[in-house]
Amino acid sequence: MTRMIKFIFIIYFTLGKSFGQNPENLLSKAENQMSNGELSLAEESLKLALQADPSFAPALQSLSKLALYRGDLATANQYSNQAVQADEDFRDWSNKITNITEGIQNGRRNIQQGLYEDAMKEYSTILDIHPYFPEAAFYMGLTRFRQKDIDGAATNFKKALDIYPDHAKARKGLDNVTKQFLNNGNNAYKRGDLKKATAYYKKALEFDDEFYLAYFQLGVLEKKMGNSNKAIIYLNKVLEIKPEHDKSWFTLGSAYEADGNIEESIIHYTKAIDINPGYSKAYGNLGKLYVEKGEYKQAKDVLKTVTQIDDTYADGFMHLGILYLKQEIFDLAVENLNTATALDDRDYNKFFPLASACNALKDWEAGSAAAMKCTELQKRFGGGWYELGIAEMGKGNMIRAKRYFDEAHKDRSWRELAARKIDEINNPQKYQK
Image (cartoon, rainbow, N blue to C red):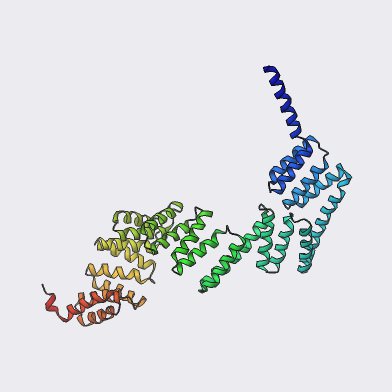
């Protein structure tokens, strides 16, 4: 009984295998796979059919059609010739391949002569007859690109990719077009035309919804406009597509910081540094947050690191100087803030803490010079005028000090401190020990 079962199983397996390798069955299977976009599996099935019967012309024709799906006209022509050699009845298919070849050549000649619409008609005719041939759509995109019709080029390059997602030339063409949209958006952004910039970035995404740089720029733009929630959505979309995009981690950190979500901000700045250990701005912002939280050891570790790996990064020295200022280590504060202002002499935020540190050391001349520079850069900032007044008080010039405190008093944030100093000048006996 056992031998009989084994014998039946062997017969069943052999017959089943033979049936499975039947060229007609493999051809039918390949056609289904082709229609489902499973081109590699279809090719495998067709080659198995030819292994079973090397002269099986329908498989050769299907391999020719498969090559058309991939935009490979040369290979399509090769298989169509083999199909005719195997069976003259397939001459009609070979003629169709010849017509495609002639249509492509005519289109190219028309483009060279500037007859763009004639070229479009050639390619459109091919695509109407063979809607699975991506090369025709690609050449339509290329024609529109030559005409500087960017929208038309993008539409047709995308059509080619919809037909065959692995079409390398169409992918390159679409990438070039979407980069133009991106560049146009960036130029509009630099001009301050945020509405037009947004339109260009979104236009790029209409044609390529995986174009992460467009999502990134939308995130940057929304953050600039104060729309942190929208910025966070766009930037997280970048990270879905490209998880190691360090600039998105950094910009997300700054968006969370703007919303007051310090812990999330720290997480994102830290991730940006993990991805890019030389990311100076991420170190600077992270160190600043640790200073604000009063976590001075962490702040010092981060800020000392950034000043060592990038000795041209002014903000790193500024934040380190502010850390020492808060710790009342005034000589180190002055040292680092002097470096910061030497690297960047256009930022009043760097001169203000330098003035404070110099005044704390009673170096009134240096404090006055730093404060004066601060007020030159930002006349409405009360802090610069306040430190200028402190320096003049230190030098004993109460008339000039009062004038500077009056200026500081105009800034609501500094009004109370300035009023106290004015009162101290007007009523010195109240403040005598």
